[in-house]
Image (cartoon, rainbow, N blue to C red; front, side, top):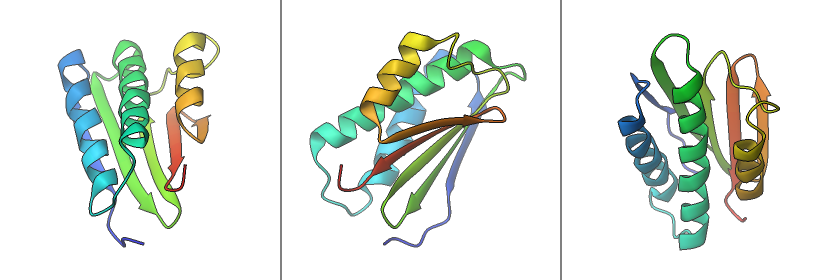
Length: 117
């Protein structure tokens, strides 16, 4: 297990920063690991979808993302006060198909991918 502090990205909530968020999360995940390319691609796509949802729904004009390594996986949190799994059904279905666990809680969309997925 890598014992690192979480990586936090806070940028203006604009579409051009979604790519930066996606690259950052993929880089953190790969950090010294030999991960399957498909695993990384799934992670990138899920993060893109989550960030795109947040950009379209944010109230404060900021995109805030936290990426945290755990012993058995990677957790990505996208913060926004207005994300709605029911209102954004198709995007959430895609995210759920790509990651091991998805949860929303108090304005935070939490994605989890296990290392062994």
